[in-house]
Length: 56
Image 1 (cartoon, rainbow, N blue to C red):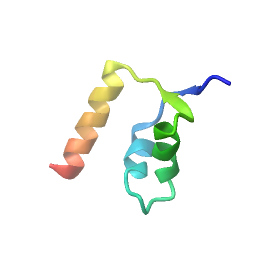
Image 2 (image 1 turned 135 degrees about the vertical axis):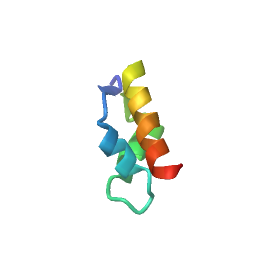
Image 3 (image 1 turned 30 degrees about the vertical axis):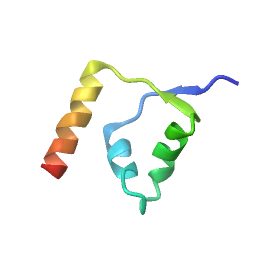
Image 4 (image 1 turned 180 degrees about the vertical axis):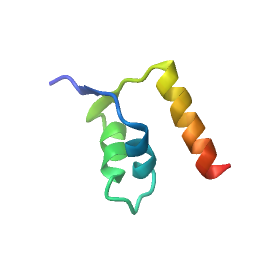
């Protein structure tokens, strides 16, 4: 079966980064090939902006 194609909300990605988060399964399934993450340049820029706000 082909992998599910998904566009993820920025908040879902950010909440899934921590291994202690209940949302970490989101990134686990992405890494395991459970789905394909589809993004646009605008979405990638939003991810970058939010991650920079948190970590830098």
